Length: 358
Image (cartoon, rainbow, N blue to C red; front, side, top):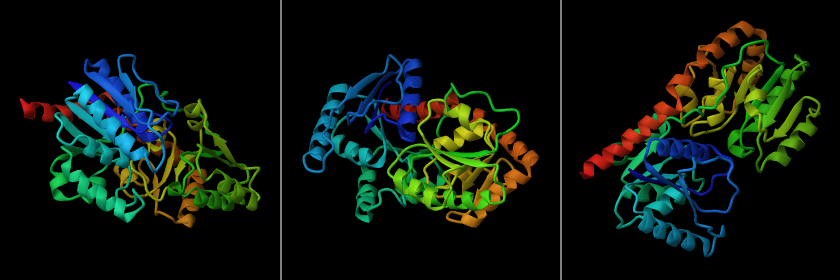
């Protein structure tokens, strides 16, 4: 098949990582694969040498930018003539639908977040819901995300979780460090202030433990100010990006995801696969609940419940054998979410559209 992926950029992000993995894997299987990016952002994720990378060099402004994006995207669709277009992220999805009007090939859009919350503006969600009727297919990360949309969309959709990288290290074994970790974008969606406050309170009873927060984002200054206000600079650290992230989080006491909502967190599934005890909010749109069974392979706490989050962290400290048992069971996702298995699902879904045309 001739397959084209489109996404705004290949900088650091969960959707960008998935596009890199899937496009490269499909290219290795003999498909003719292109990846179209809109903006001039240095790529973080590599592509297989046989993947054609098409850069639109669109201006990122709110006046002429959208019209240029639409025109350039349509021109690429016409030139490349793909059998299948996979579009990622809601704004890209809406533009792809408009750019694809009247053109051959099938357009499949993929939701990568909670459709109840993203986009933030209600009018934009209404526009998305109307435009989505014109797409040919849909890939959702969780059943809850699929069920948000109208039955006519659900009938044309499939649910596929995120893949794990084939380069993921083996699960951790050994003595754990007295450190809690998280690795997320520093954004309001992640509710990191709740984690900081809960850990600051926990630290009064367990002063040997520290918290390391990996990632960057718009909330860095706000978080640093909160840490300083709580006089926690000596035990809560904003670590930024780390190239050796797996090595740093694997021996941790636990990985904590305090998000208000998520699509399906890549850092969470990687921590599960690495054998790190997991504490996550039971956030919409159901990604954590889909993979974590409470007290079997991880701990789930209610969204926004600071006391429950503190209690869960204390449970991990006081029950190390139970925490290790849950972490060991969590590594079973390595098979379920292997890159090969997940690529099979995308490939099979694409083939249903190709076969329908024959």
